[in-house]
Length: 298
Image (cartoon, rainbow, N blue to C red):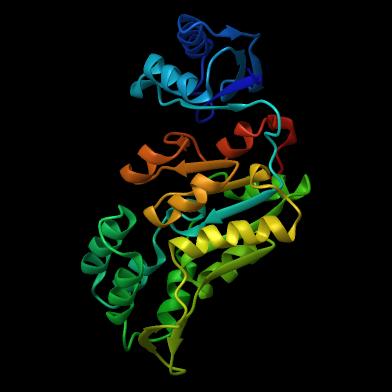
């Protein structure tokens, strides 16, 4: 069987030798041969090389052994080819901490109504395109100054800067993709150093939003198509790609990427993704690729 590696990741100070020992024994109980622990970052991330066990079995066993109370993430995968050459990242609730459309809606006095539709769309309960059109329609007449106020309130998810800077420094192409809006993706991409961004465009009359979004609307299928297009453009197999997101419209790209990570994701996404990060920050995506703390760029 191909050599595998189980990476255990927590927030700084959250990973102990006891956690690693629990995971090791869980793998051994299933007949795996487990190698020496390789600490990627003290008390934060460690690799356990193993063989004779499938990656999904190892991940499930480690999660059961650790339990939710440990607040430790576990990602198992093939040891070869861990470092990816292409990053495709969702923006809202992934690279940034909020949903920009919901925050725009707050300025229009309809945040609760819009946020409920957002929740249902990200959980896969309703069609993303229909949900986007309905939500944007509620913003008709909103002054363009609300866009700038929303941008100024944006906060980046911890680890986002390090993720992009480190992967760029090691030759990866980094792209930001969103079912949200270019007004925000352009600024986020410029600030964090993404090579490019892809998103929807809000329409306005020069003073206020018209309540419409430009066609074609970027949705779930387009995220997958963008992953495939960028892989071809950069001469990469999909196995050399990393995708990260949290909502139902990210599912197809997460499934197709060499490493698709559900990040603090909605239940439907967390349940479907092969890899997920529930507790750590975005530095977890670097540790999952085998980067050591000393290699991470600020």
